[in-house]
Image (tube, rainbow, N blue to C red):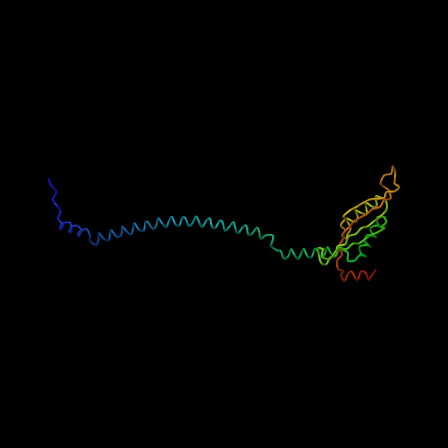
Length: 215
């Protein structure tokens, strides 16, 4: 049985029947649905990628902020710390640094008398102002010689280290031991002590002048 041939007129009528406004509308809607579905999927993946990237960026910013906060902690209150340091330095200078050679000699003489030793010689050697740690201070090196019994001389050295006036001991040398106690022990022996010291002279204050006037 043979299939009847479809003439061009029949094909035209079928195509025309298929291309009705309803069919075209349905086809258009299906195309729009497919396009919207594609865009929705693409938007979802783009949003997910952006969210992950944003999360990493936020984490990096938080780490950077925390690092900056830790680094800035030593700088907080720096002005107050500097002011307090200057105040403490000024207090140290007024309370522990002498202002004249006579003040140094008087303090050494007082300590020697207290420990019952003899201060025989003191040589002062001021350093160049350009080498001083502070333009308001003068570094003075002392070469002192004392004599007396061994124990009082040791006590004199200890009293220098604890004295209110600042003395930095550089070298201690005992020489010229004579006499002695039992079995020639150092205790009770008459010896010479050579000391090399360093101190700093500050600028005199009005209160220093008033104290000198009262003496």
